[in-house]
Image (tube, rainbow, N blue to C red; front, side, top):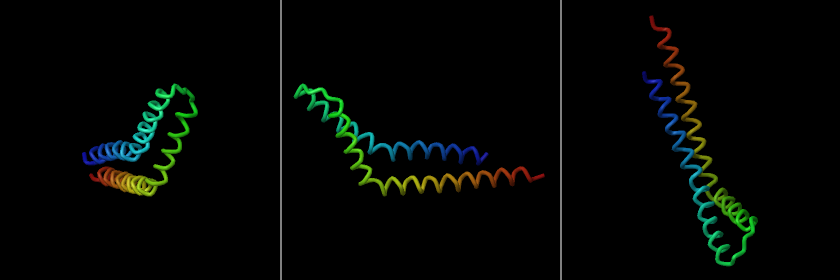
Length: 99
C-alpha cells in the first residue's frame, strides 16, 4: 500500500530533520564543554557556572547564526508533512469509495 510507504518516509524524514537541525547545537555545546573542562582541569577551578554559561552563550550564537537555516528546514519539513498527510488521506478515501 502506498500510504504506508509514504508514512514511513515521513517518519524517516522527521528523524533526519531532527538530527540535522539539532546537530549544530549539540556539537557546539559538546565542543565548548570539552574546552571548558580542559581549562577547569588545568586550573583546578571547579565551578558549575563556568561550565554552563559558556555553553549557553555558544549555543545562543549558533542559534543567531543558524536560525534562518533552521527555520527554513523546519518550515519545509512541516509543509512536506502536511502535504503527505493530505495525500495519504485522499488516497485512503478514494480506496474506500471504490466498489
